[in-house]
Image 1: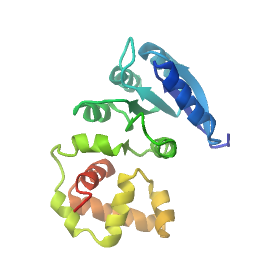
Image 2: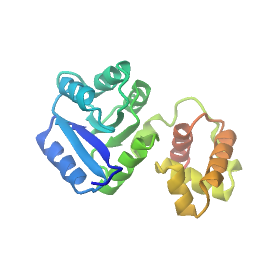
Image 3: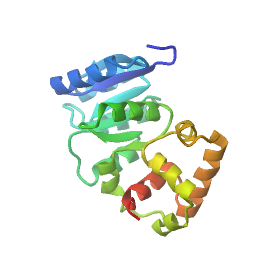
Image 4: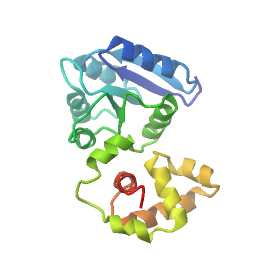
Length: 211
């Protein structure tokens, strides 16, 4: 654990899934596992009491489902960032998760390294979506996909990294440019795509990955 450790908590009703997540988190030196909960009401109590930085939350919890947990935490003004982890979700699942206030939506079969990147990204204030989840909601209204054709090669690179959940700092490091340059590219991307934020840009990127 480091001085800048991310305090994470788990809300999952399946013991094996909790053990697997715990093993993932215990193996990362910059993550401190705060507490665990096995049902919705316990997840709310845990978060209110310990206020972890990130809550890994299953959607299907007894007593109060994941959406209810997120809504309760938002209503109480808890600053914890919520990362949904689920096995399955209907077409409305990702939309409802984001609308309720979740900061990310992933499936439980996510690669451990990708999960760690998602935790860091969510903690840093970004929104993270699994490609499959993005595909479920990419067709929602908003944004002009024709704008993708107007992006420069470098802007497409930046957009691809945004869709991968990368922060501006990470993008700057990967592309060997300054964060100020990345911010300029992001502003241009949003303007050309006609979208309001990085999440909408990422959804268009996923939807039109082969364009």
